[in-house]
Image (cartoon, rainbow, N blue to C red; front, top):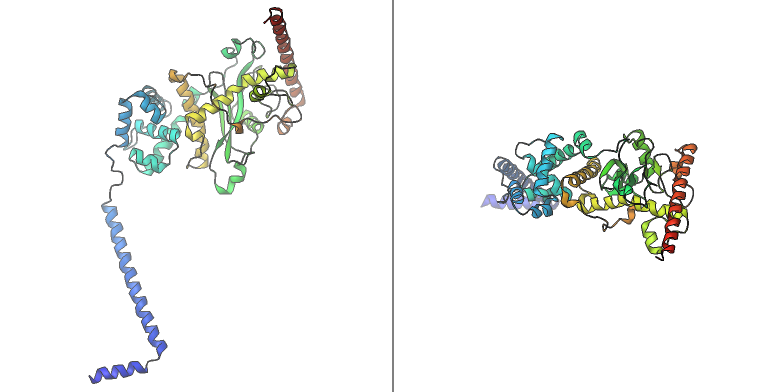
Length: 427
């Protein structure tokens, strides 16, 4: 009791600020002890989870089982889910194995890898959602997607399903069978244009990827024929790049070779040259403009532009088909910008494969809506795109102008003769 009284007397003698410090030290010590206990518990828990992980993908319907269900079920069910019917799926898998070097992985065979790839390009679902659908890890989904992507864009697969016409190629049936186009466009081998595909670039470089409408896109240059097949594709250029710059690069560095004496139909965003036939400027051109005006051509320039637009329209239609078939062509995905650009190339190759091996896709796509963003307005001045004109020799531009004028004159004479015949017959 004497000791207790002594301690009480001693505490009364301790200054208040020292007593407060002692309380703080005890509180800090208790907090540190609790944090240490929590850290030890977390470390033990993490170690336990590594040694005995809790299963995440526990669905009874695995990715391989779901794929087998699609292959064995109604063929249109697989078309709705993966964009392809079972027989065409098997054919594509075989071609990717033989031409693209696609190989089975440790736990994922080639069929499931292809299904993962098709599922993503058709739906543009995230890696996480795709992983849930196939009951695989995010890493497995990404690796499988890249494996099929590399197989699709491989040199052998690309050369088998995308190639430019040779010098001795026949006149396209679309031209030869239409008296409004033949023989005027008998040397035309395709239609060319650039299409802006949405991308998600790194923040530091976004300025270069903005197109004239302020959207983040890549400008993909493409050539197609009237069978709705891509003949040539150039990817990797920012949305701010002009079509004419892409065409020049394709000729100099991209392996684009147009047979001598042949040409492509292009819009007024390209320069007039030996390999491109462009419309007259400052003259009504786009088919939508003709539909609104609802009147006949008044001179040879208007007639030429109308027929030229009808022939060139296939490139706008094929872009519309591509963006309707594959959601990844409409929306950016979560892969790197380089992979996003390669994906758009792969989509054109898969489209070509489907056109060759799936007869049921050989339908009329004339009803496909054309994105106004891809339809450039007619320039105001000159006879070539300003930036492109500087890169084309004047003599070449003159030859191209003479060729166009000759076609326009012959076309106008035929048109006037047809009108005279109809008047004589009272039609």
